[in-house]
Image (cartoon, rainbow, N blue to C red; front, side, top):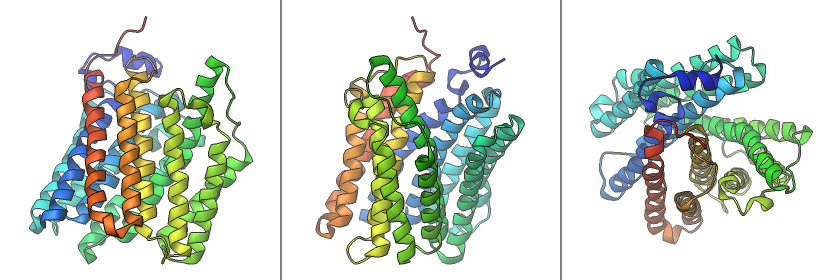
Length: 394
């Protein structure tokens, strides 16, 4: 039985018929709630602090989306059967338990020193790392060993976040490591799906095709990994900044070869190029903060990667994959346009606010509102298709 046949044979609740369904839907809902919750606490002096906000956006929301994507993609990569039904529900339950544990510790600081939040929240990503390793090794799918390694490092960074925060109140090293892993995953997997989906769309319409992967792509990934590792260890060192600048430039060249300019008439494809553009811009800004910290603050590059690259690319993949794996046509409607405009506006305003300190707070408020609206639009627009059985195509 292949992956598609296994999914069709499943007879349980539709939401647990494929990995992307519960994780995309509820991670988006959590993102829509968590961002304004932190903003309210930030403005009013409430108990939900910056550390919670950073963790829940990076390891909570983004971790959930990554798991939803990998649970759907890995079976296609390896030819192995997908995780569905009760095992998927249990894995999703671990994610939910992690969110509850993190919220409980944020609202009651006495719980923060206990070991159980680390155990409850940490189990989820370690369990997913085990799933990926099992599938890659059993399927002898050596091409995706780097993905298994990166998910493992993300799980370790999440555990390190708890330990580092307990020891010193902040978890800067673990946060940088987690963000570096997610950024590299976007460069790796985004670098596969963006030209692939562009090629598929252009073949149908007879448009210009993206360049075939080659040596430039390998060099770009190596330099990007080197820059992110250097930044994780020594974030303000000029050498780390220089490598990141080179990585940003290489990713811009890589992106230009994929002919995103020919996809403007199909936002479902074009948004992948915009997400990757945010990745390149984020690397350039992060590198600039290492080379010229008096000109560009480190937070500007960080938010270009988080609000920009992560926000835009995750919604790009979530919309396309959700439509494709629930039997809906790969075509853009009004809800997709609304989602894409809102998330890009949120990222642009968030980054601009970091460059203009005089308007930082009002821009932060507007950006958070736009971010939350983008994810609510996804929940409202995509919730029905993710909760119902697969649509029958004509």
